[in-house]
Structures are given as structure tokens and as C-alpha cells.
Amino acid sequence: MRLAKFAPIALALFAAPLAAQDAPPTPAPAKARPPKLVVVISVDQFSADLFAEYRNRFTGGFKRLLDGAVFPAGFQSHAATETCPGHSTIMTGDRPARTGIIANEWYEWTGPRPGSIYCAEDPSKGSAKDYVASDIHLRVPTLGERMKDADPDVRTVSIAGKDRAAIMMGGHKIDQVWFWRDGKGFISYGGRAEPTAVTAANAAAKAEIAKPGAAFAEPDWCKPVDRAIVANGQTVGAGRFERPINNEPKWKASPAFDSAIVGLASAMVRDMKLGRGKSTDILTIGASATDYVGHTYGTEGSEMCIQLATLDQTLGKLFAALDKTGVDYVVALTADHGGNDIPERERERAMPMADRVALALTPKTVGDVIAKDMGLTGRVLYGGTNGDVWIDPKLTRDQRAQVLAAAVARYRADPQVAAVFTQADIAAGPLPEGPPEGWTLLQRERASFDPARSGDFVVFLKPRITAIPPGGYPGAVATHGSPWDYDRRVPILFWRKGMKGFEQPLSIETVDIMPSLAGVLGFALKPGDVDGRCLDLDGGTASTCP
Image (cartoon, rainbow, N blue to C red; front, side, top):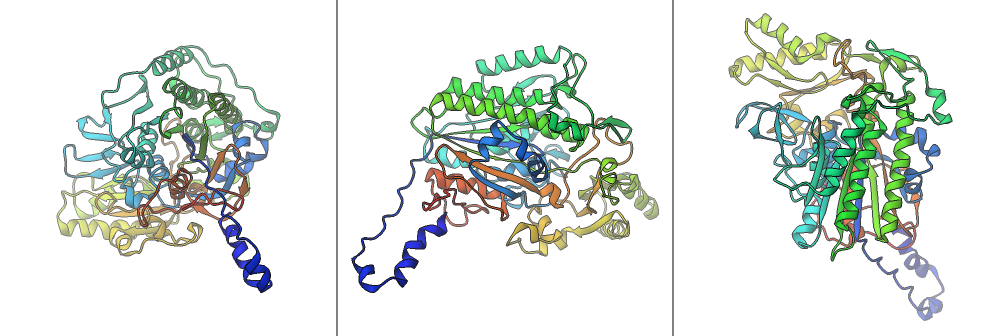
């Protein structure tokens, strides 16, 4: 570790003067040669809680990573713990306040298509329903982009189950970017020709979806959590991913989806000969199934246990395939956010505060009450039950002020609400510093805030209040997106063959991943280029940071 490299200097100061003068200086450890391939994996909704619960059960890919640099207390430190903001931090080294990706969706009232804007679309092309994927909303470069600008021979490839995962980790200058689109398979944008690997992956996925899905094997260590429970009118907790024919949603919410994603990434390594060119190549992988499993079944039943056990083996196959290439590669694995289990099961596990958000707290319901009181017509509030809320811009300035005051007062008076901050409150707050676990709610939101995109105010529900109301969102029983640590905390793991592994329990941030990889690669970043800091990944006397 970096601190150790200063030990010879400190000892010399206290040694006998003659010995200190006569002894030859200890040579500095040589810098390791940079790897030829960087592999960054994001496991969607893989919380630090899940990592801690199952880390001793892993025998495949996760077990290998546990021999590297292990940071169990990583943080997606911002408040907007959703897929798009989380993925935007990993390869940029910047928090959402800097990336501009403040949520999965936000509202813009000007431009080619006023209204709801998806984080990974071009609103000037297509409709909100049939949108065209795009990187235009990401305001900062990724590591791959920076490297390509310095060396055109660098190749960047991004494969994921979600477009927002692939695009936010790959950035603006991706050689190959492929992601799943319902009903279409793995697709891309920007006129890219479909490689043979993608054609084969789509054919295999289509054939698999067309068949009934057999039950996945359940490890013995999953049986203690195998118990059925009714959550929001749906029975979950004891499933093994059986599914009928032609049921794509159930296929995606199963280990089969990650097998397809990781399989395609492995095929791209083979076909493109990644890591065997003139320069270092970058491969980012968004393993999305854990998120679909978490939303569909919760995080503490047999389904999640089987999902992680199977993903462990899937990652093991990926690493075995990489080993066979003989390429020197470095791996970083983390998550875009954590997740919360279903309140019905949490209440049985000593969490009496767990509940579902009341229907009365949806922005539409609150807005309708306010509009009636003020004699207004039409909808006045837009947004979700946990996070940013926007006021209809067609209202007059005075009307907007009255709506804001009434909405803030109503939300703050509700027993399920922890805090409400106006845009003025947030803008006045300084950017947070110090360990992320100590940030206030306002500081967490400040790290997610963009004045051009964020809401007129933000609502935070109390801990363990699930932002899915009773009877809402068919097929989804659990979620994430809160500013609480169960959604913010994620594992961060690094591995490279021959590295001296260690475990560091202190908190770090996902924005530290990019500058840490830059350090391993010897790629120079200027002070202030990114929000994150370089972590010394050498467990010995050498340092991987400049």
C-alpha cells in the first residue's frame, strides 16, 4: 500500500547516523506494466448487503475477485440511486451533479419534445415510447473516451442488458455498444453493423425464450430463505424461475439473462481479439438480471439467492475464457445502486417500520388536491413518489410559488416523509466532502443536483418505505432509488493476476473506480478532472497511483 513505501524514509531518520549514511537507499518498486484489457462489470442492484450475505458462499467468479482488492463499503454516494445515475459515475469518475444524469427520467419543458425525457434517448428522434438510444445527455467523458482521444488505437466495447447501462459506462466514443431491447434482442444505435456474435446471441436468446423455462437448481444454502410470501398481491420468495413459453419479462428476470449478456461480451472479446492489439482495450459489461430479479421477487427469497449463485458461475466462465486468451487484464466490479427488500417480508424480520408508500403521496394525487384548492385545472405536479417533483411551467409565477408552498407543506406534514428540499435549498448547499456515510440528506441530494434538469423540489420517504404503493406497478414488488444507505452502499472489487490482494473496510465511492483504473494504466489525469480519487490497488510496497 502507498503508506508502506514511505517506511524506509521514516526508519532512516531514527537509525544510527553512520549506518544511515553508509546504507544504500532502498530502490523504489518498479511500476507494473499496464494491462492490455480493462474489464469493468456492473451488477445492477447488487447491494453491499447482498454481497455481505453471500460472499462466503461464492465458488466462481466472485471468489476470484475476493482474492484481489476488496472494498466492501463502496458508495454510490448521491441520493438518486437509480440505474442511469449510478452507471454514469463508474467510468467517468464524476457524480451526477457533474455528469448531468440526475435520474432515469426527468422533465424538460422546452426542446424538441417537451415533457418526460429518458436519460439515454435523443428526444429529437422518435417518440417517448419508440425512442432512439443516445449518449447526448451525458456531459462528461468516460475513461475509454479519454484514452481514445490520446490514442486512436484504443478500442472500447460496451455490452449490457439495458441501454442506459451500456451507454453511460461506454460514453460518447464507443466502438461497439449493444444492449437488449424488448422484442428486438441486442441492438445498437448510430448505424453500427451487427457483428456475427450479436446475430448468434440474438438467435440463441430467441430460441430460449420460445421454450418453457425449466427450474434452476437451488443450492442447499439457499433453502433457508426459500419461503413463499404474498407481496402486493403476488406470491414470491420460493420460486426457481420456471416460466411459460414466449415470456420475455420472466426470462429477463432470471439468471438466463445475465448468461446471454456475459456470453455476448465473451464472444466480442474472442471475435475482436480484445487486449491483443497495439493498445489497451476497454470492455464494460452491465449485468442487468439482478435488478429485474430484485424488482420482481424482492432481495431476500430463493430467487435472489439462486440468481447470485448462478451469476457467480457465469462470471467464472467469463474469467476462464479471458484466461485462455493469455491477455493481461484487470477487472473492476461494482453496482449502480443497492436495493430494498419487500416490506411484507421485512416486517417479519424485525423491521416494523417497513411499509408501502400511500397512494395519497403520489405527485398526481397531491397535485390534484392542491389544484382543487386553488381553483386550477389540469395536472400541476409531475414526478415520482420518491425523488424529484416538477411543477407545471404553464402556471404563472405566482401560481407556481403557491403550488410549491402548498406541496412542500403537505409533504412535510406526512408521517411517511423524511425530508423535502426545494431547488433553492439544494442549490444553496455546498458540494459534499468527507466520508459518504456521514453526508446529510441535503448533501446527498446536492451530489445529484443539476439546476437545468432537477425538479422544483425533492421528496425523500423515510427509511424502509417502499416507493411502490399498494396495488401499484404490476410485476414489481420491490425497488430502490432512496437516499438511504441500503440503496447507496455497493461492493467495489478489483482483480489482476499476480496482484497482492487486501481488504479495506473504509468507505470509498464508485467515482474512485475510474481514476484508480487510470492509475493502473499509467494514464494521467489532471487535478480536478474528476470527482473521484485514485486508490492504491497494490497491497505491497508499490503504488498504482501517480
